[in-house]
Image (cartoon, rainbow, N blue to C red; front, top):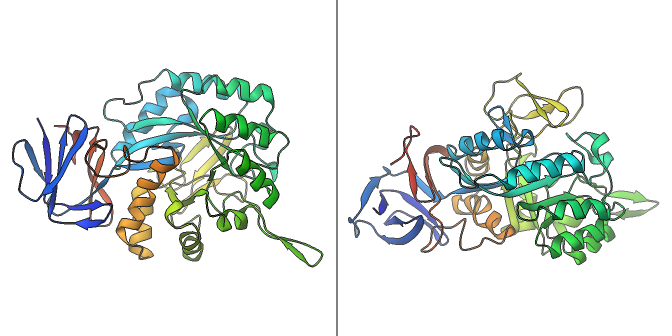
Length: 390
């Protein structure tokens, strides 16, 4: 039976409409029809709430005590937890570890059902490391970091079916060659946790790098050599006109001025990511691990225990959208696109994910005022406000 969502404010590519219904059939959006023109199905009145494409999180490590780094079992718990937040598609991010451990995890995720019942769709695995700069390690264990070798890339590409993105530092020995091989195999290569300068980033971009991991977090900035100012990865990323880039918009990682700079410089190429951790949803003071690193839930953010560094965020994507639209005044369609259409573009899923349009996957989110999750549509199946499905 078709499902017809009516009574909502629907976020479409052209803006927010309050005069249309969304018709879902067979796991796809069948139509965006005039309000009340269709009644041949299960009609669900969302009572004036906001209806958006399902949110897409390209960079998330865990949720509510569960972590992708612990393997597929906990990964399924993360996917189900995020679905309740209106997040319908996820790229599972893994922190730096030995290549052997990452190979083990990739093999495990390669064998799971990517559309587990009641869970966000697993789009693939994002390796955030281990090919990162020690000086920009953040919450990554410095002992796990290393330059990429040909043998490392051989091992990782054996799992190309599930490996969708890798973050690396372009200045490391072997990084440009690794980028070329990974990009040729269809893996999205991102610059991050890096001391790169302009020449490093341009060389990697020429080799196929297309994305930048969380602006301002783990990025080199301008230095002086004598009287000369040399831009770092941050400034080069903001100045680039072809790279997509991420921001963590939790109101803690970046102050409003930096988010506004990213908005102006990157524009429609900007993605909002959560960088969410197992600390998401846990009380202040709760501890969790990212690989071998112990972190603690602080005042709205994760903190590395014993270090002056963030340990990821403790908020899911709806909180990011609440901050951008409610606190900073970004237009709702712009903020929503940064968490839906643009992430879909990064992974080559434009038209299938991230939009409410005929033929797109029926992944939808319904929010109360202020982006508080109310219900989710997962692959055409309604997950009600109390978690009940219809």
